[in-house]
Length: 385
Image 1 (cartoon, rainbow, N blue to C red):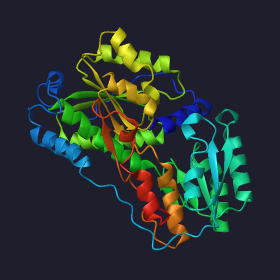
Image 2: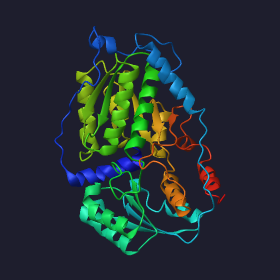
Image 3: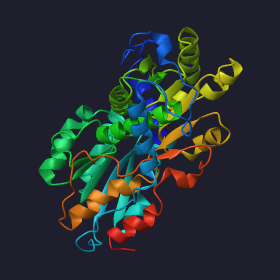
Image 4: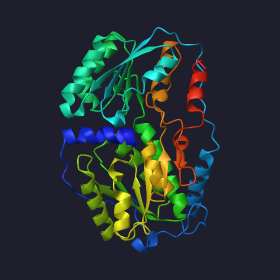
């Protein structure tokens, strides 16, 4: 999960549950014939030779990574310029990971008025409900909700929005339930990130490899990203092995670091440590690998990377790579609103991400976290640029 989404969900899970601190090793794909030793890293990297029985799959993974830079980022133009008299109510959390205030400049491009209704995770789901009630009472043209709590918590409000004819844009939710107009940056988007994460790991490994995936399985975005990762790993490299290291977003980072180090000690064949849903569970891990003498044996690859704060770790080599996750996601939220305003089709209710990228030490700058010219591309498509 991207840093901003990870921050948000860490706060939520501290309130919702106290998951027992456990580490589970779950074999997702089984090494064939020779046991764990056959699943080790070949020593190759993305520029090296391909070896082993999974050569065709590794070649496919490398081709997929190479193709990412060849695909132009485009946004379908609106049929006409949007009206300028629309209002947006934005229900958003107060933690930094929710990027308070970041939606308003994007809606302003359309000449629209937006107001943010904040909720505090520390005050529990009732504060979320209160913020959504206030937003609905303002009778906006469009309702955007950072879904920090499950949709079931606000099923009544979703039904009210539907009855009032107010489109409900669900940001970061699990799936588009009845009454939700579109689920932006949801399960489908994170599955795609997981697929690219698998491509990057296999491209770097150059052959079958043993991996440990660190995630909180109760967190929908992490689960979706991990699902995409394991499906693609199984498809392209059936001789690879993916272990699941279960951690909890409600635990302090030091607990997760200790769990991870202990896991790596008992699983010495692991060559890649991946974070399918973002970077929240990664905090403190790079320095822990160094202090335990493991940094030369285990490579870290981050999924759903969107926060520039993680880029220095990639630049200095503490992290081998990250999957860029559309840092300027506010445009993705506003785009369906712009289309609805002119009567255009918004497409899928659970769209995949229109762009992902790979960040390595060679390109670890803020610009690598977004497609080139993202703001200009959307402005042209919306006929305001």
